[in-house]
Amino acid sequence: MSKPLDVLGAPGWGEVDARGLVRPGSGEWTLDWWVGASDRWHRASQEAAVRQSEVGAGAVVETRMKVPDGDAVQRVWAVAAGGGPAVAVVEVGNEAATAFAVAMVVEAPGTVLTVDKGGMAVGGQPVLAWDRPPASAAVGRDAVEALLEVEGGGAAGLDHKGRDIAGLVWPLPHSARLAVSASLGRGKPSPPSDLPDADAVRRGWQSHLDRGARIEVPDEGLARRIDRNRRRWLGRTGRMETADVAELCELSVRLDHHGYHDDAVLVLDEVAARWTTEAPTERLRAFTVHHDLTGDQQAAIRFVEAVAEGVEAAARMGAEVPVEPVERLLIAAGQDRAAEDFRRLGLGLAEPPAEGLRAELVADHGDELLLAPGFRPAWQGGSLAVYELPTRFGPLSYAVRWHGPRPALLWELDCRPGQKPVTIRAPALDGSWSSDEPTGETLLAASR
Image (cartoon, rainbow, N blue to C red; front, side, top):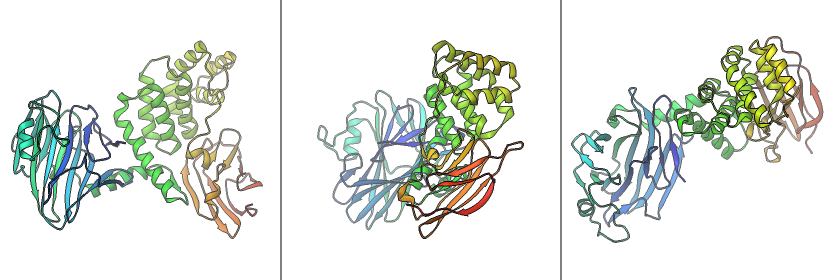
């Protein structure tokens, strides 16, 4: 399964497969990596001893290949640089006890490849750049097979004839690293030394993740999935043109649920710009979720025409809609008359989907606020906490700690101005407890 290479603030994206093969979103070319060790050439896409992991919520994809005396380690990450397209950095490190050679093999079926000292072009478009020119290079199937000592026609042979394949070889001493940069869009990539390294990319993505609500769960695997999913959602904002309206609406809702409201607005702008009768329920849910979780009147005004289009499409199709949230948005936008007309349509009520982690952490669909409604039995005895989680009533923070079999609950609801008192309950922890106070702490009944 491939992993996405996304960046914020630059066009273009790519992916890395389970063996470290890099491919831009356009699919115009692929970049594979080989290692020439003391015994033979090892091709990552065909070797059995290859394993992969993700670093920094998946911001860096690391692929290890076993070779004599140790490992060859490839790391791939994507960056935005200098106002140009997204760029992937592909780095190979020698963690074996002896030197080996690294080959970068580019294939672009039906396209002419050219190589010079500074980089490589595909069909005349610059694609690869490096700081140190390869020790040897070859273009064309026969030349690449000779360079890599591959017998044509064998199981490890190269597939494409003509000048649509290139091989680039560098010697790599013990503990050394070699990197190339690859453009994921249209534009010349900068050499790797001019681009952020893997640690900088990991830190940068962590700062983006920290903009959202903070969630602490007593399950390390789940915690990693939360960060990885959030990074992928944020990354998808840079390639919205490949998504349909329903996918964009789902993305917007997920971003809003986790506190990435500015990013959600970018997605909603794209949804509003696509005049379509498709997915009216999903469109209305996306706009109303943003309004409910932010209380942003200006956003309500900004999107009110798109909401009206969604209501019209829903009425024609007989689709169900989130009735009360639509009314709240129309009224917030100063469209009281439109809200009255909307009520008279008598459209069916679309129930909010109870899916995703947020539904386990909070429920705010009615007049009550439920804390940890989906509390998992496996979490008992562990620490659970959320900070600044968006709700319809305002940002919510709470924590569950344990005193033997009894859960201690601490909570703080930052109510919006004019918000009426909200009843807070935690039925999955103690069905008999409730409070109308926005802030407090209590020791709940013993868990059964």
